[in-house]
Amino acid sequence: MPTTLPVRTGFRVAGSEVTPPEYAHPPLVESWLAVEFVEGRDRFEVDATHLRERLGPEWSGSWQTLGDDAKSDDQQIDNVMGDRAVRLTTRGFAFGWLGHQGEHYPRYETIRDGFVAALDAVRDVAHHAHKEIVPRRWSVRYVNRIPQGTVWMAPGDWSFFRLWQPVPLKSLGIGCEGYKARWEVPLDAERGSLTVKFRHDLEAGQASGHADGLGQVWMTLQAKGPTDGDDAGLFEGLDYGREVIVRAFNELVTVDAKTYWGVARRTR
Image (cartoon, rainbow, N blue to C red; front, side, top):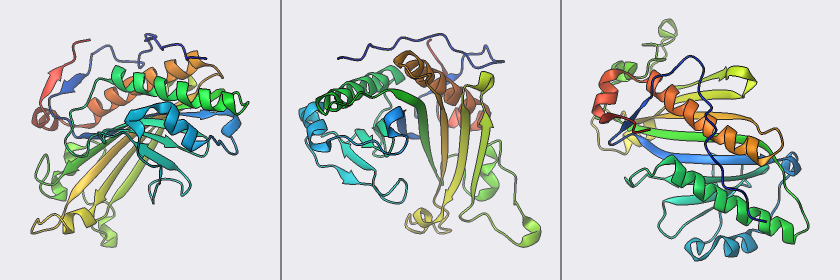
């Protein structure tokens, strides 16, 4: 049975009525919408071959087992253009946009439509296997890649990220190279949580040709929360999570960084 198309619910992040901006060339390289199912609390399984056929001719490639950034048994298939992906996880699936080659970021509604189509395909395959799947948790994740030579040249410039504390643990003689940090905060009204990660990729710097080999930093924001066991809660959660991430990013970076990325007022 087809999934009902989601509609925007009007959820807003508490304490802010200011519309956050858009960017002409943001550092965003990945955007993922994901769901965990009740049946997948221990293990979610679906016939991957049947699912690829159900997704359509755009998804004619092969499923690939992911590496260190995900569970070893997660599988991902990319579309023929290489800018969309479906990922099967232990407890559900994710639909993502991939922009590592400089692809223009589509509007959120376009990605959400892709997620809905993938959800229909997953449910269709599960139905043929005599399984009913119910959403348990939603998740939205945005990955930003910020190379050296853009809004920063040296670790001293990482103050474009407002949570950065210059020279952490200086008395221990610990430098900034390979720095990783994670912050997790609860969302209002027990809607879930927001996780912010900041990571310096030193290996990428050593291969980039920069004389100092500093490379790039990654800034990842993920919002997740419960669905109340139905599609309405799932779609409301995804819309809410995306709004949280957009607003959080706007708060986390400086005015100079926004200017570099071509800040513009959102049209809605």
